[in-house]
Image (cartoon, rainbow, N blue to C red; front, side, top):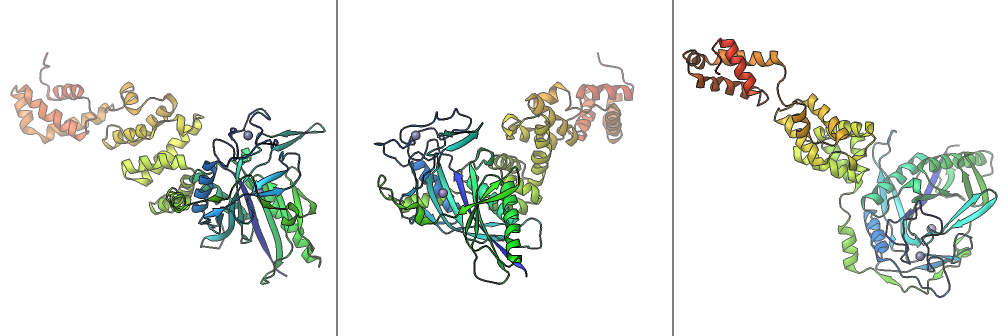
Length: 482
Ligand code: ZN
Ligand code: MN
């Protein structure tokens, strides 16, 4: 029998606010000493009260608008009760039945298969909640680091619309691009800023009914998301093929080092969490103006950006690279607009400049500015330097930090240095201007100006005038003017 794989995701994305969700603690705990960015509020001490962070609400609203969700006028926080040592309050402040946003969708393009159109995955909801701390297990002991406790998270839940591990990864990557584009999350996987819980089940192809799923918890890289889903898909398939499909929902703990999933326990249901409205925070309201503002602040989304670049004639991989990196795309757009040639801008910025930066161990911020690159291209367009010289100058700009004009002057690159080429042009000038030549022979020194002008025009200003004059004198055997 053929089976169909059904996958849904719950994504936790850390919001890039300055402070935590309910207190003024620094939200950037990365690299900080354990338990140094904490206070009595995020440590859940008795007598403290949470104060919701407006910035987090705005970022969540903007992300929701970018994901096509419907923002709720009224939403509120709920307590989700569970005990775990890294959860100092003994409950998480989350959103249960009235999340900030519902619905929405993400569309992404499958890279390499027969499906030509894009794939759509519907979203169920987006809600806001605080993160727990971190448990560190070392040398037979367990330690708690509460720096991350209270960090604002967006939880984005999908419908079970994904059909393969590969699609789940493409979905997650598209989500990452969107959250970054609207500046709601840095979504840096290596810093644990985006984590996935993946649900998977199988059913006979063509059947409607969904079967008990496995929920794989806390996957924190695209690679482990894909590997864990492939592992669990195989395990479930074997059960189906053995005639005893999984009868109950289970939780799977993925061990990335060993590449295996361990069936941990039966899944908690929402009843286990005894949700109730958070009594310390009043219900929240997004007015029309806040909802309008969220929608107006989205700007051009990565998918739209990518289509624009493809329409401009860029390669798909170039368009994807730009769409996924807002800072790079902004840099690129400045250059492309100035020279009014996106393809040429792609070759200069994405091929030449990126290559030189990489070789020099630098990034865009420490390399030449877009204006410096535009100035270099102007030298090429005015034929002051050739395209090849331009490439060498760009490399020197990256290495030395100097601008094009400085390098051209220092290395005398802006002049025709090939004497034979110049001689040919001078000879042409002489042939084309018999009257001026006759005047020169007649002693009219000023007539040389016509020949020099011809050469300068021919070389578009790249010839050295005194050198041209010397050649004219030599070729016409006129006495040197001292
Ligand atoms: Zn705090
Ligand atoms: Mn959650």
